[in-house]
Amino acid sequence: MPFPLIAALGVAKLLAPRIGHLFGGKRGEEIATQITDTALTLSGEKDAEQLHHRLLSDPTMLQELTQSMRELEVQILMEETARLTTINQTMQVEAKSDDAYVRRWRPTYGYLTAFAWFAMMVGSSAAIFWTAVKTPAQAPVIIAALGTALSQSSMLWGIALAVLGVSVHCRSKDKQSRQGNAPQGLLNGLSNILGKKD
Image 1 (cartoon, rainbow, N blue to C red):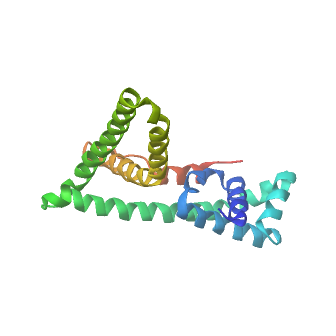
Image 2: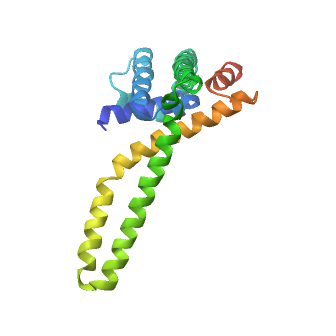
């Protein structure tokens, strides 16, 4: 991650802690940059690193800029709520579709991911056990090779499991909605910001 972006994330976390949960991933970088650019304009500082150091050493300035960020926080939460609402509407259309393929893609993906994960773990464990029993002299080499292969696939598994996690989470929200228990989302955070007094 570029150093200016790290500094921008530091500034954003100081000035907008209530939306800190949004600072992950590419979208989070964009939000942090937006907050930092606004703070630089208000403070007159030249770059995010200088602003970050000044905020850490000047509580008065930190408080003033935090107050100034309230309106921007609300705007960002409203934009994020609208974005998630659009995603939810798309998923609702999928769930209500008459096309079995459209309705069942999430469960199918979940089962396939779980099976692939199980097969990889069992296969790796079996290979290590078999090597240790049959050719113990080669065990260190084979175990090292398996470790390298698993570490190189970690990014792919991270993406696959993240998609699976989002699918399960959204499925749970769908069930709550059908039972009349609407899950709380960013609007709850918005009301907390509007109602909070310093």
